[in-house]
Length: 218
Image 1 (cartoon, rainbow, N blue to C red):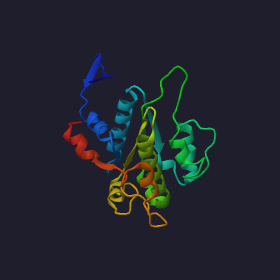
Image 2 (tube, rainbow, N blue to C red; image 1 turned 120 degrees about the vertical axis):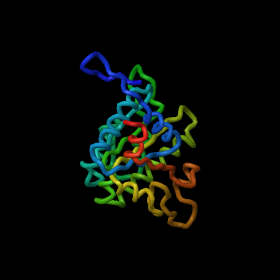
Image 3 (tube, rainbow, N blue to C red; image 1 turned 30 degrees about the horizontal axis):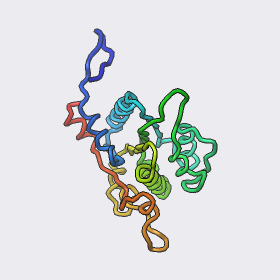
Image 4 (cartoon, one colour; image 1 turned 180 degrees about the vertical axis):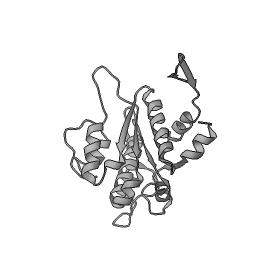
């Protein structure tokens, strides 16, 4: 149960769908879609609050409406995860892939065990620059899987929730989408991220926000 201020003390608001969504994130990234903007915002804001209440969990919010290019995307990412240098590229030693491997640490606090990116209006980048979205989705899935597969220390579970209209659902269902398939290897061999992560494909699941909230009576 979560307590929220009311006119007379506190009104207790039942939490029903949040643990269900969290359970889906145990081994997958999530595409959460719905065509009602207000409902999408309420879903994301509520789940962000829920995640923030969990110990050793970092919540990183990406604002899709402000992303027109890789420069805009990197501008947001470097404000979420402290890094000495971030090149405006997806791959490479100083690119986004390197940043995603970095743990956030604060003196006197344990390192986080889970990092969740909540990407609002993710479908907008699909429309503006699908190639960039594809690259970002692939590196997100690849690095996240790599860290769980190969990390010999404390595992950092890293997930992304792509929130958007039905356009993001259609993208997720496309055969060639990097949300559910690795890019082809140039040499025709095993795709790079499959080799590195040990996963045959990225792991992504779909969530219809309207149906989820309606079934929960929210």
